[in-house]
Amino acid sequence: MNDFEFLKNRNLQTDRNFASQPYWAGVFKRFFAKKRPVIGLMIVSVILLLAVIGPMVSGYSYREISSVINPETGKQVVARGISPRIPWLHSLLGKEPYTDFFAEKTFLFGTDDLGRDLWTRTWYGARVSLLIAFVTIFIDVIIGMTFGLISGYFGGVVDAIMQRFVEVANSVPRLVIVSVLAIFMPKGIGLVIVALLLTEWIGMSKIARAEMLKIKELEYILASRTLGAGNFNIIFKDVLPNTIGPIITQVMFSIPTAIFTEAFLSFVGVGIMLPQCSVGSLIEDGFNNITTLPYQIIPPILVLAFMMLGFNFIGDGLREALAPKLEDM
Image (cartoon, rainbow, N blue to C red; front, side, top):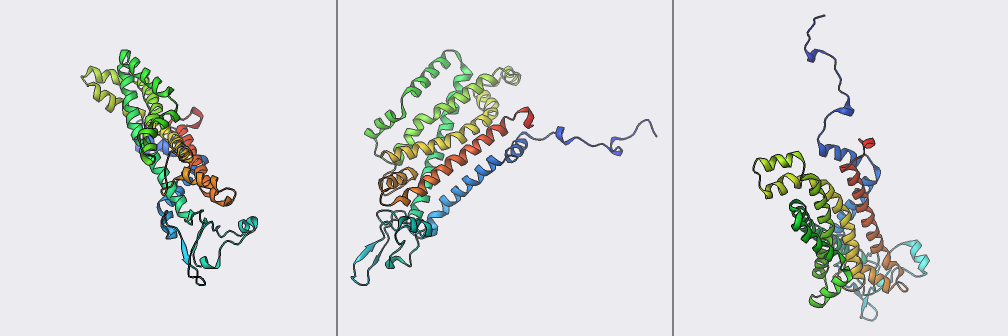
């Protein structure tokens, strides 16, 4: 045997546990290695899919009042409070699901007290709630990250003034903000979005500031400053990419908060107004008719519960995948 031998001729095996892999590849692997995040992702995916295509399936508009002509009297009959075709529900309610006039029409979730299809309104309401949540969180991420990074980077008097502003903004109750906005703005999507914009950015700014205080004294930041990099480049090119992980986790927890806030505002009557609908307004309608149409409140409550559950599962999974413990690696 020769004293020197090329490595390629040796039978060497690299331990896979210590093999190098990209950071995001490890995040992806750790995320899908656990059941709860995968279940949450599946729940959210199904709800998003139904929110997009659900209103197209039934053939009814969210504001359309279904009616037929009674062939005996020639008068128009509105499909008020027609329950869905669920045998056990019909026996529980003790009434027939359909009259002869609506035998050819299909209402998967039944109709409300005005004869509108609940299937269409449920998924259209989910679409509105998700749209409001995504728009507000996207804008809040931009505002909160910018505010927090600037506050943490400059420190001193600038940080003290900006943090006092955050404390004042955080001390005002959300209902007070909504009440003041309701005086100057019409009720609807605009009021809900503005109310969420004024409150949800605070959590983002605190996380961004904490990450900046932790990162700005590291060696590579000092090297960039020594080489003449400006404040803008250091904040948004050197520090910002290293704060994406915690921000993504915060976003996943902020989306269900925004959805629940929108639902609450619509429930108390200052959110989405008729004939538009959201999950919160549908729950309000179902609550008002719970004694006569008990099935009406079930679909929006289930959609809201599953949305909250799915996004929280995804948030937990991302938090563990982006900042794993030693035993999980």
